Image (cartoon, rainbow, N blue to C red):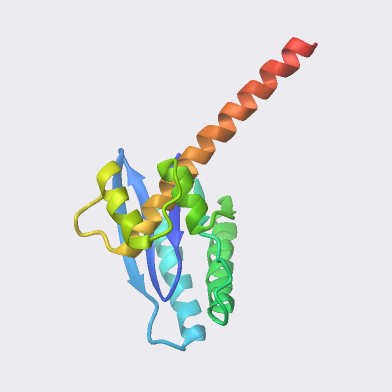
Length: 165
């Protein structure tokens, strides 16, 4: 399954895999304070990205409520949800950065710099990847781990139902 992971902010990161190799993209939405311009820019970037990557699912990191910037991040997530709906692609939103790191690494690493160094040790991350692209890769790996957990839970649930019958 090809997932497109997005770490959305004014400076954003995107990550996906092609034949087991990470592909990343970093993009800046414009000058500070121009939220309307950011939304229009993000919409265009995400439509182009989804059209070229053709993901089966789009995942975004959950905003953890950082004051006034939270409304801006909510607008970015709404744009991502809209693009997903336009392309008929499932949209997953709910992991915050701490949960993503816990699922990707098996342990929670609070410090962003330390998490990036750890990610470089365990995942084949391109040297040129920015911190935002690495965050997107961590989210991508977290969702892959969660998908495996969900598949295993579904499988064991079916086996328990068969035994009960």
